[in-house]
Length: 448
Image (spheres, rainbow, N blue to C red):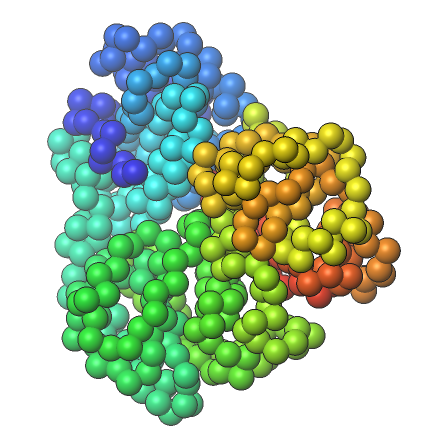
């Protein structure tokens, strides 16, 4: 789903209002005037209700007010540009210059979330915002937002290409000097993959992406592709998750040394170069890698659980933050150390009807996440129970400050069994992954 798929030139406006609510109302009024089928009062009420729960500010200079509207056949996107700036109670204290109004059908919450995430990624580049504010007409703004990646290449193509080539060359030299087993390369930071077409490397390159479709046939060097199950993570989260999935899939071993090459998604430039020794980076309390790090949990199942958990952390339920726990793998032993708090809503259904890999089950899981207790999931992804009380009766070492009973129970069950546990914190939105009683990974609340 892309911004340009739902935007038209006649829904790009210059805004006059300087106050937050006044500017949102101005944008809604202008949009509904173009689309008479929309109920102006209904749309305005829905957008303002959503804004009262959590601010739609997403990045410096940018906010995305949005709402779900009953029986809306397709998404509606409108752009409001304010050269003077809107006082928006933004996290950085600066005015907002670009409002993106998104209206979606309340029957399609998943697609609504996907579009929000895509729009946030598209507009996150400061170069895109500068170009929009300097545009001479709404037609030019529409062309810029219709193809932001082309804009990024157009703005400073020679400088960007030069920097990427230099840092790629340094990464290859460094990999040889430190005898690295692999290069971890964040493909989403590149404007395109043309720079990789001429790359000469004897070292395996692990291409990390949550957005790009990579044509492996174009690449002449040894490589593996790692698909991050979601975007919006900070850079540390991207690296940590990429390492975990690489080890879980057997692409890397415990003793490997790698060169990591990352950048901000959609920035068009690689700007971070690190040497990572996995023997120091990954927790030493875990037994031999890679088999034991996941136990009987397939990598696809872990990726899907993390994806659902970050979605819960980002959106909550009905505008309210919620916390929950997913316990994955070693099901029989976990079951013996747990009991139902409520009637098990998954009991009696065939395995194929309750696989976490089935996208149609996601909304059901999010709804049951509001129930106290944990989800129990087999290593192959079949959900066995919800609303389960964990009673491992195993003491764990003191958890970091701010983690409560939910995290302690998750850590305990991973000590007593060979499962993995993923916890969404209601208070912070962090997603924590536990194994062997310790924290294996912490992902900060993703950006909307």
